[in-house]
Length: 579
Image (cartoon, rainbow, N blue to C red):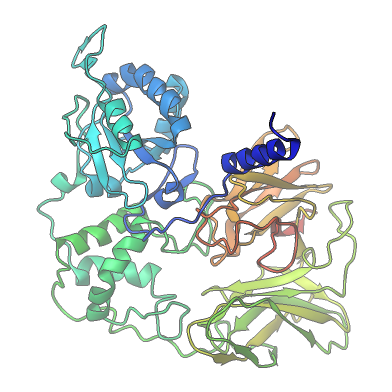
């Protein structure tokens, strides 16, 4: 008979072996395609590099072969999703859009998300020409392993009762057994995909006429000698040299760093590039980077010296010098400034002027001295978040409050400055200045801030797609003007919602691809009315795994904390109270 301690040891070994900790996966992140699905979620393929394979099934609205193949597809997904295979459908039809695809998915009960490739960035990369084709990708390299139909059951206007060849599952079985796939391509029967590349084949794009204007409108704001980007788009030769990297970051949606879902909300400070213009840039690169005629538009751009964007401020403060190391994690730095106000004063705007724009990630100004009860909610005030005055980050360093509004600064106000720095490979010194613009007469409305927050949560080690919420009940009629959704390194996506008194839900801002390094003040083109009795609901999804490229350490259990290695869920917003 086995001794008790030996039996206990065997049980422990079995438990440990059954629950092995995940390991990091080396991934170059090349071919790291990223697409929105029909519900507005963003899927970057490297996030699924812990799969055994990624399967894309080409879908098109109204295609009868697709609709008739859904039963077969569901069966394959049921059988293989538990074996480490990740499945998506992908729609590259130029005639379909998110809403149409969403309706089709609901009507026919699609089993997996549909990735939307409306301008065919991925169709060009994977040479998608027909629906009802399954494309198997290596999860780490994203190279094609196999492409073909699910099986041989369907033909044009004809269906067999029995299946002779199971092409897709045969290929997946080979992959799971680490065996070679003999026939890597089997031609599929489906609905033809009209390719933009065929339509535009005779159009030759040029740098001077087509590309430079897009770069000037969307990229130069950061990619200049005084900007936060690591290199400057000064001329054609520079763009030529960086063109391969440009294609990579565009196709993976790492750039531009405007992260809001383009289908939700309109923002006056948006610098997002339309997918049609992304396609132009990538096509121009693939066509051979033709220069065109005439002078170089980018070389003619003269970036202004770093003066004050809104003119000379009424009051300027120079912060203490901060030494930024060449490389390592840098905790938040804090300073305080006494505004030396002799009387109550109305602030109409703030400009943050970094001493070194390459290292200043963002700055938050908070009035921690005035922790008064909010006029629109009954909960206890949160001193570090509810009383924020301004936020500046990236190229958005100037914040002027909406017309006829202002922030009341009482006599003797002392502001707390929180500074987030990022290293750039060499030790530098930053000495940031703050410019304050004041009203000469009191404005019509006070510009308030509130920050629904969740400060009581646990994120376990290796937690994936963990959802947290923060809720505030609104007790007066208000209008929301600005929103800043905020999380830290484990944040994956975040939504700022308003639940109206009739229980309908309106999403104000959605960030499907949250990135701690790119957090913006989203300035609504038109303020959103929020009636009394509504709720502000902030929903955050967290990823504490190795698939989160920004994760400092997925082995850690996380709780609320002010450092970026801790976690937060906050929905900063600015509002005015209705009369």
